[in-house]
Length: 260
Image (cartoon, rainbow, N blue to C red; front, top):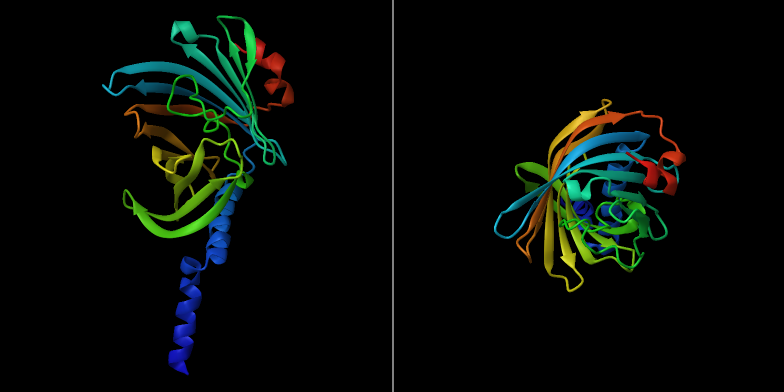
């Protein structure tokens, strides 16, 4: 009887790895824990440097300001302002992330003094010539994906949960994503992106995580490498500030035009 009990316990502990239903449930619970731990920060601002590298490792640098606001019951609102180089100065990007419908996104082109709406079926296009797509710069809401637990794996010495994410948005440029979540903090360490043909397209790595307000983790560095083109984009974040008191008027189309 003791042997049978031990065998039963082993089966229960390992079933999630072979049972798709339980693997899906465990994957969702891990992603939900990550999402829950990052709720409640209300709003934030930051500055960042975007470094674009081509196949020959030649670099172009951009300076950016970013502000974001949580929206209860929906996705975040984000306003991005380009400060440099001169030809992009004053260009702005506004994003409303949604959970159960396509995101709303607009680009203000300072050189033309007009607002361009980003089509809901064109979110896979490159954001401002970078290796990040428009769908990458929107907040990654929990119910935008289906999840499957693939097992445990170390990334750069960090014990991680390995999950497969399948976009529920039919116009996504990705067939799937493989993401590694730090077991201790539930922060994402790395994401592999697979194109619509299920070929590895890009890898995003996060490093330099810092804790803010005693609870919320933010990475100092994100690097997106495109395996198919040899290009990459690095984002270097600093000067995070929370509790700015933003409201919807700070993220409407008028704010897109008047932001300085």
